[in-house]
Amino acid sequence: MIESLSIIIPFYNEEKRIQNALQEIDNFLTKKKFKTEIIFVDDGSNDKTKNLIEEYIKQKKSEDDLFQLISYKENKGKGYALKQGVLESKLDWALTTDIDFSVPLLEILKWDKDNLINKDCNVYFGSRKHPKSEVNSKFYREFLGLIMRIMNFILGIKIKDTQCGFKLYKSKIAKILFKEMDVVGFEHDLAIVLILKKNKFQIQELPVTWVHKDYSKLNILIDPIKMFFGILILIIKRFF
Image (tube, rainbow, N blue to C red; front, side):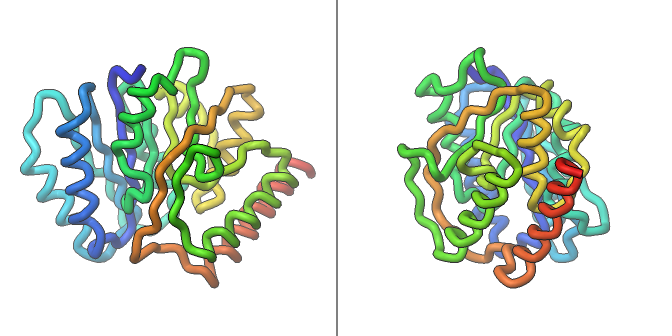
């Protein structure tokens, strides 16, 4: 059961999608029944996203909810941004999620309502490969997913979907993981799993509704190359 929740949302130049994201957050806040903290992490944006979020936060006055914006000038990568947000989080659970909300925030309420979150596990990964998940994806994401499953096999990772951005951690566990995690790019998900495995923390995969959203920051030509070299470094660290 979730008693309080910090939601960490990294972003980089999301001017085209930010209004929809803020509406998603507002919709979630009207339905949740526990204290919530929203932590936006600006990963060096150079458009108007930061300004729009600052205006949004100024309008929010609530005794039950907290809002915070972390910002720095240089674009460092999603892993770095998540680390800053997690280490600043204050509530009992920490949810990391993408600002496009391909997995809607309301999914966490469904997990809670269906009693999928229990005292026996402190880490939950949203999984597009779960048999109960509903997924509307593009072909190139399926191709990248295949590559990641091959990499998972090489690294000895049994999690079926490490790359879904919707992940829930008990905060004390999240801080241990992200404090140790030193990977800044997209491959940070694999680094987190390896740290969990090393510390013998249990991971449970849960079903999600996942819908492709336009204006993705994923570059089908460049990002797979970056991920390959990032994962190669992880393999070298693990086996050499």
